[in-house]
Image 1 (cartoon, each protein chain N blue to C red):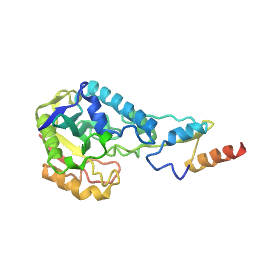
Image 2 (cartoon, each protein chain N blue to C red):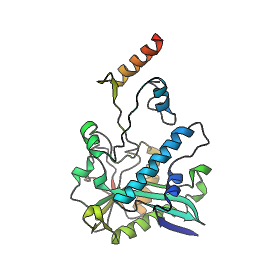
Image 3 (cartoon, each protein chain N blue to C red):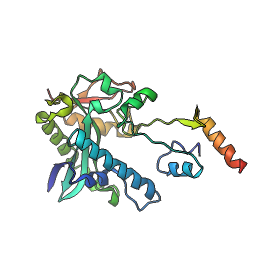
Length: 77
Length: 187
């Protein structure tokens, strides 16, 4: 799943939800102050530009760590 | 016959149909959500800004659009350019309703140029609430090569906008440093 993350065209959000992940989306055009606070590198000239953050138990982690933990929890089952 | 209309509450679905693929693929659910979000976004923009897109119709069939917003609606840029009266184009598309796939027969017929010229003409006279009811000074667009990663589109992109009076703006604020911003000066 980690390798597929940046690909477009798949219902990746649904797959994450199926794994028990809470997905919160924020429209950065509607909430510019959040974009400026958390994602100042966002490209205002690119309508597809987005920014992703990953949390485990309210602690922000890297994308790599997030998927490693997700995989580990799946294997535990 | 080609007719250009402003997007309004009456024809939002035409814009959504041009912009977002519809169901009938394996992505039905995500596309449904995307279409709904786009519609809500346009409804909000209409209330805040007024008409934010022009739609081209050929024999009453929607075939293309240009979408645009005041620069103050964009993160980061709104601070860099808060005293400027600039409209940023987010998309120009010609190719028919996405329910029917990409209809290339509408491309290369000057429809994009007609859309752009209609926008320029409109903004020459339109007073924008975001600009304290003043008129627009400049129209800007970020290159789809530099900013959206479609390098193959660059020659056509530049040819199209240069033909319509846009010029390079190397000093135009660009927090990404990617460059490629083109502008049209109205004032």
